[in-house]
Amino acid sequence: MRVAEPGQRAAGEAWPETLTLGPDELASRHGHVGLAIARSQRLKVSVPLRLGTDPSRDLAALRFLTEVAVQMADLTWTLSGAPPWPVRTLVHLPPPGDGADPIAQRYAAQWRREHRYGLCTYRVGPGFVRIRDVRPGGPHLRVVVDGPWADVFGFLVTEDAEVIDGPGRQLQDELVAAGLAVAVGTVTHVLPCRLRRWPIPYTAAV
Image (cartoon, rainbow, N blue to C red; front, side, top):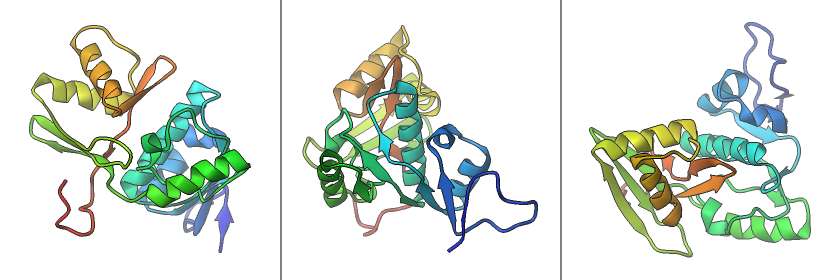
């Protein structure tokens, strides 16, 4: 197995089987990390990730895990400590393979047990967004966001927007109240992943 760090690939060289990422590189939405995810490379995070101590790093980790889930890439990573949210909040995202300490191990084990693809997703149609949330441990939701709210939702999932005034604030608050978004510092992060591939079995309601 070839393992390489981002930035070590020479011009014309094939992508390695496994791309190892440091914590600072998870924030990148472009370049080596984004291209590796888009090509469904095997990814590995080099150090255990701890959530709940730094909002900017938390957002970077959530964005990264969400993109990995969307692309269905192969990711290996280790959790440190317990995140500040219930396991249900994150269970639709790629679970850690292990925990760096007993608390993290228990959290990670539950995450692995309950995880499967497509637990919390959204699909985009002409002028509407359809959200499906069937994460275990809470109410199952099917929500349609339409009209001007669909554009606001699109902005939120693209930008991880700071808390805003006006009509958009109402949608942010409703998403957080429904467990479909979390406030990280001054930023609202939308939790559902965009569904790009039909789940198996194909008869599953989405």
